[in-house]
Image (tube, rainbow, N blue to C red; front, side):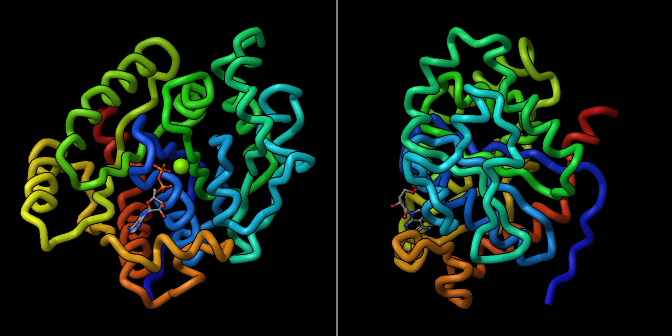
Length: 273
Ligand code: ADP
Ligand code: MG
């Protein structure tokens, strides 16, 4: 059994990639569950109106459920919307509901529209001990994603090992730089996770090699394999760690979580020197 110490300020990571279907939500919930399994207290913020992270964590998110929408638009405290996931006493979710789809437009006329999530989380984290906050973003660079970028200090990018992966990456790095410059100087790319990896294809190996060459510090050793068990788990309202804890996907996410926990904010500290 792996033991990891958690101490210090909570780490706030946003799982981002402007492409859909690359494994953002799957990575957010499975890493969160794996970190919780290591003993960390983890909050997942579901910022995607589709609510897939809320589904996978087994929390209520019907239209009447108090959600991130109420936090962003009506100043409801985060503590009032957070639910514990049935999966672990260490695992929490701030759910998304369908109302969040309108938030993108409603935010435009709000005061400090880029910082609503940051302010709300700061207040919550003053009173609540959390080791990690993991934000699951929608696949676009609208105000919801910008709110995630200002609330976080770390960006985690899941990369599907396929041809266009790198092309999308330079766009995303450009967005991160823009946010750094204008809205959140702390934001940095801390982690890249290769996912849906099929080692039998040459293409997957080539993409993995290329990403490792360009981002040797950020890419985790652990790689998430393409696995049916991973994709089945959400329909049972579970992460793969609960659904099939010994499956290859669960093992890989646990390894990735250990790496992330052990690295701490090493890269951020290096940057400061
Ligand atoms: P995103 O949040 O970026 O849109 P998802 O996490 O929803 O992407 O993943 C897209 C699809 O791929 C989902 O159907 C999901 O179940 C599936 N998927 C994600 N990771 C894996 C994996 N490692 N193996 C197999 N299927 C996966
Ligand atoms: Mg998603």
